[in-house]
Image (cartoon, rainbow, N blue to C red; front, side):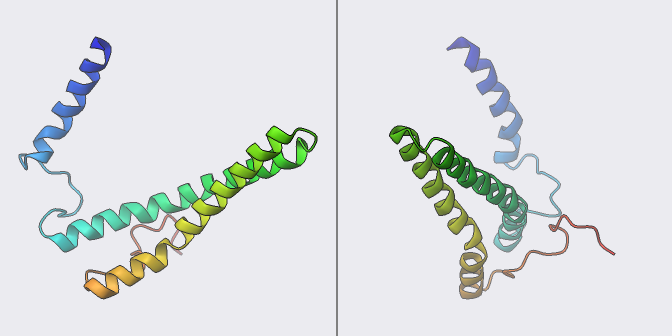
Length: 125
């Protein structure tokens, strides 16, 4: 238990000034109003979504490989089915994220449902 208290204090001392507004991250003026906070959070989410989608895709195919390669073991077939179901569910949720954000942002009029050019990690020509 004492091993984790040092980590706990390190995390608290790192983020406490930010939480008490004594210091702010340099996220381009984030925190000035609700709209900028929402825009910063969605820009981070637009970066994380492709990574999570890739992980869900790999989980699905991991389950598919367990299902096919272990066709003579009933417990491995059931385990493979579970991986495929969870991978499919995660892919559905992650890929429908654009629609969910679009509906919420249009209803609340808080921003665009499309990520801005600063969050897309593609080279600009």
